Image (cartoon, rainbow, N blue to C red):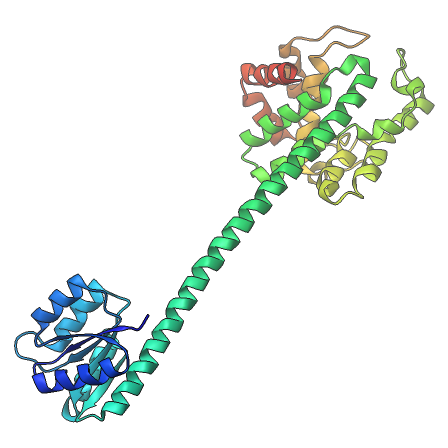
Length: 350
């Protein structure tokens, strides 16, 4: 569809000349002898290009330019000016005009300027539409990728949880131990203000902390009596075995570090490396506390579950030796009911 052009000039002869030439080129034409007449045309019609005379009685072409750009920002504007007023024409460029035409003008030169300016505007509009469509496509593809990643992550979590439940079932006395300590880790980590991305890694590390026990024989793992020194030596291999299993899986490399260090102690008396203080990964230092909570408040073959107050006493006693003192203080600040709610929720959803 050919463009619509509005010519605004107080000289009727110039308007007629422009309309005749433009109509011959196939353009749809309007004309106006003043800014007021032009405003009526603009309010009632879509105009692709306007040719405005700068010097007109009443409101000038400069005033009309500013109003036109407010009414129809997409309209291309060419200003018509005398040679002596090119400074004003340049001002119009800054106000949004595409170009200016000097009087007296050659009609062929004007037609060429009109064609060039409309083509430039067409390309700008096409580019803007392309960018908008591209952004929409990118947003949609990003949404699809995010959904796929969430589904994949959920599938990973379901698979890991099923595996861990099977391992927990192997040690009959622990029940849903791994899921509980994962919930406790999340509670303590959130209270400490740990970012969600890091907390997700710690949660998986807590869930998978005993994965290495898959390599420990039933005779040792399920032995009802106290382990001898040789058996303890084998049992202490499970952090390394767990690390070896997980570290080869890209999305589990972070949890693997926590699994490797989950039996380290703040004072360096733990295993397998005897790491001390902040050489122990933060997730492992958090886990040591919540593992103690779950171990003490769960039934064992050799004793019944201990009361929560016993946990409080143990954490206070081992603050600075087994446990990071700063994390221990935060642990102790969390009300008992919140710990119990997490443990109860894990049991219910199991």
